[in-house]
Length: 325
Image 1 (cartoon, helix red, strand yellow):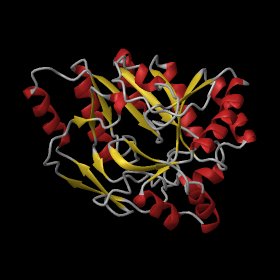
Image 2 (spheres, rainbow, N blue to C red; image 1 turned 90 degrees about the horizontal axis):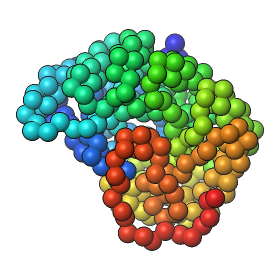
Image 3 (cartoon, helix red, strand yellow; image 1 turned 135 degrees about the horizontal axis):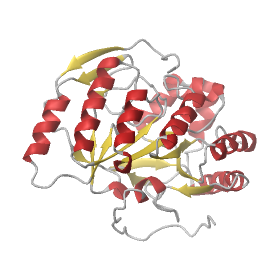
């Protein structure tokens, strides 16, 4: 059901000693707390920002915080005011195919939902049926996003080798929506010249429209030194070199609490977004360019953050006047 994991992973139980809940670093999610049930991720996406952290475990290692439910319960009990929303696994994936990990994820999600706290998550994994049943009982408190860039098996094997296959993710979307759960698509990170080819976009958006999707949140690949190294190490040179060369004149911006994030040049993102917009419109879908990941351009607030109904603090206006509409 999950597909084959790209590498051998043996989850190791460990204890979380630091605080479980912490602020989300993305501006449009201010007010949302983040919670990670593991250190490490078996999905092994080659562009993963969390894998590029110096303290991230090496490929093949995955640590599950077995004491997280108890620590979460204690933290919630000490709070004078409960958070309105918690995002599951911002530096990993809540639905990796390991029973011990899934058990911790389930206990944490249930604990939050029973207290009336909205749970939001982004996943590229398979969501087991027991989670669908749990979320259906608290459907007004669940906001789900499925990460999906391409239906091409070659892209999946190369860039997202340990994730659930695209058809399984479409199945997640179908089951969530059938259960009355707010679920949408995050089309991120777009890789110009790889995922934004017209025929691939047309196939993807046709499939999404069949599932009732009318908008998608769009973000672009960005790099930091650790991400660039992952791309060099894990992609074929014929793929990595032209991909990294696109960043040569890209601006350095602050993204997700890092002021040393290199973006693709704005003209590359604009050309790519035009292609995405045209392909999406053919199927009655509206693409929303993520403001937080494109601070130098005119962009929008993602549907995923709008669904949480939080106000977004205004940032200093310094955006380029490149038309996107």
